[in-house]
Length: 593
Ligand SMILES: Cc1cc2nc3c(=O)[nH]c(=O)nc-3n(C[C@H](O)[C@H](O)[C@H](O)COP(=O)(O)OP(=O)(O)OC[C@H]3O[C@@H](n4cnc5c(N)ncnc54)[C@H](O)[C@@H]3O)c2cc1C
Image (cartoon, rainbow, N blue to C red; front, side):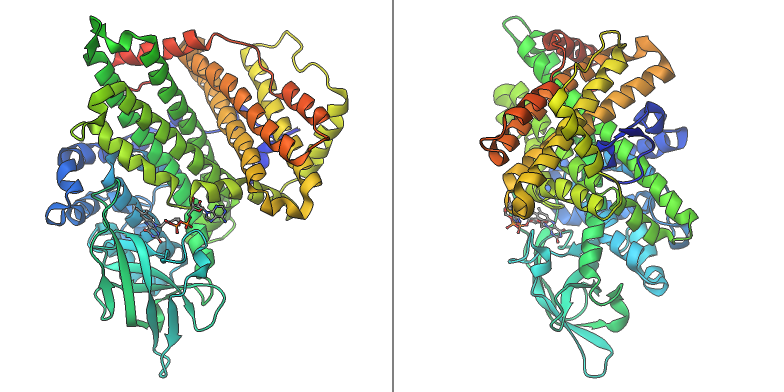
């Protein structure tokens, strides 16, 4: 495997990465930390004290909060100065999103507005369209929504039947159709609506003002969670959309929808980190307060195990999200340097890391689901009370596995996109995979025995990558064109890839942190890393076995032997490592690593 900077998504599978090449959250500068703090200050002042009112949708409170966030400049963090924004980097935007992610329904409204609501226009709009709408969106005067899903077009988004027909005088598109599950739909003023022009096979996108004649808004949906987030069906009956409000080119809508989703996915992962940290704080506080058998339940190993595991997954997600965010930021800067304008550079930069965006969406949302589930468990019976904060955290988390592409769709995308990108020549996947296949005939011990801490861990990560490459190569070799119909196998291989990326990101973060702060500063992080790698090895082995036994029936012995070789790590005392992580958080009474 060559060592170089990762210049495209999925390439981490075939390259060694040096710790100096990745960004770690400890490197956020003063200005970025101030932006994060401004977000938290806003939440603590305006959102968190009003969570019940928000969930009851009292007096249009969500729209008012969006307006207040706009006044403070929070809606314009990623918006260029030409449209009254602050033109912050992608990385900084992601950091702010982490904070906002901890605000339950408000997070959904904020993300729907600043993300899928604003970005299609910001990235694909012409100058007149942007000047007309973006400043009001950044200021919070014009809340936005993104209308893609229809009753019969969910995951298969391009199958929608909403239709736009050019009027006889050529001045308007006449829009007809129905959209459902539209976040912010109950109060948004500007809608990005996807519909097909005449008999086109692919969607186009239109900027539609909700006040226009023919737009009807259904009552709010009753939902399991994110109850304060507006979610409605919208109907379009002969709505006259001026031709100037076609967004991008005719037929470009599906591309717009997909490209915006890459960014939405990694943003959702950063949201999950903020939400997980807030939930862990609830759990640690409660574990320190609640006494049973004469002592705080935080003293029990079973509770410490849960707290540690919550922290480990959150730390790992954080390591991976900011690594990928900086990669995307660097790609955007490179494209801008080469002359692409702001929107095009962001589209290309994020599309380049589509594999990472999809895998982080899956990992982040599932880590958060684990965190909230165990928080309810730590609260015991009180966790089942609707008066406790973990009740809201539990219900609100669940949507993350469904929107921005379900986790099934994203799992399928990870391996499929990596293979297709390699086929397009973006990086060499099958060359290194073939090398691994030749290596498995003659397996040699992986460790020499004299490796230091990080060198040993790097051998494991390298082996995890080999396990992934072996699975990709042999899966393709066995299944060929049938691969697309073998979703279970593709998902197994994606799970191997996810574990590998997240574990490598955490390893590189801890190594870089040690270089920056010294060995004493990373003792707990090493405990956490030990557990993560130990668990990842078992997880990759299980996913790999499931895949191999499925595609290599009768011919699996050699592959299974190699898989075992590539996923063998030294045993460690995970119980004690987890206890040390938990005890530190218990002493700090919050998530702190
Ligand atoms: C609260 C909420 C807010 C939302 N906000 C918005 C919004 O603002 N704008 C918007 O446009 N949409 C929004 N959505 C819609 C959301 O993006 C869709 O619900 C999601 O994409 C899934 O589509 P679906 O519900 O039709 O499920 P389906 O596509 O019917 O999927 C059902 C199940 O089948 C699986 N499945 C489907 N196709 C495949 C396949 N090819 N292979 C394997 N498995 C498959 C899915 O993973 C899922 O498990 C929102 C949804 C909710 C619930």
